[in-house]
Image (cartoon, rainbow, N blue to C red; front, side):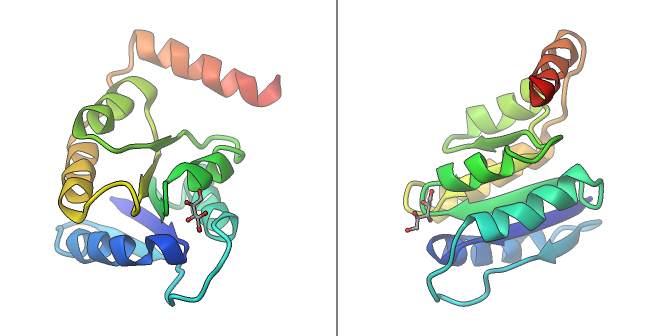
Amino acid sequence: MRIVVGSDHAGLKLKTELVSYLKTLDGVELSDLGTHTADSCDYPDYARPVALAVANGEADWGLLVCGTGVGMSMAANKVAGVRAAVISDTFSAAATRQHNDANVLCIGERVVGGGLALAIVKAWIATEFEGGRHQRRVNKISALEHA
Ligand code: RB5
């Protein structure tokens, strides 16, 4: 499993915690594209390379952390092929994998505590896309990229 991660300064602490966890998993190839310092920076600058890596097939999924997760998701969803979801509960983490085939997980460090964020990542990793009728709907999302 190839995972690409990124954050801005507001998501650095949580990203660091989640990267530590992901590094403990067998079979994970991790690429951390920053930020690596607490200096103020702009979340689209980190959403862009993560989203492109997922869209280009260089990574299976992406993890983006900012203050709310919202700015990261807005930026990542501008890239064709990306289905980024802002998640703050484990039910939605599983459901967005099952139903939306979400491929970029966005979490807000100012919204979600470290324990819940870890549970969200575990639920995300453990859950597969169900296909079937959901594939038809995901195809309709993709069609909107040309609307
Ligand atoms: C940074 O202050 C903050 O705006 C950013 O991390 C994020 O929450 C934007 O959506």
